[in-house]
Length: 102
Image (cartoon, rainbow, N blue to C red; front, side, top):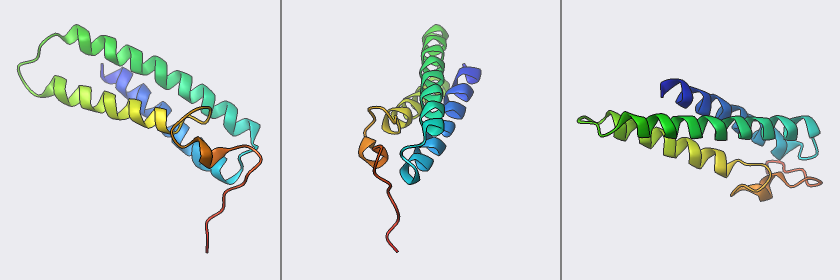
């Protein structure tokens, strides 16, 4: 369970980093590819974590609830920074560089 959550969060961190770079250079094929690979890895890890959580059965303490919360938060994060169809897709549209207003 913990290994799958680790993989989910590590892949999500790569996806967040590439999303940030794509905001500055939305036409970067390297970052798009890295983001897509990280997204796929995060989804696979999410599935493994969910399977492990179900196998834990009912918990008598808050452990299962905490692990489920981390899983849900990780899934939300990877959906939001999905460079193909995430919630913030407009921030990384190819052909449009996004710069900070000074």
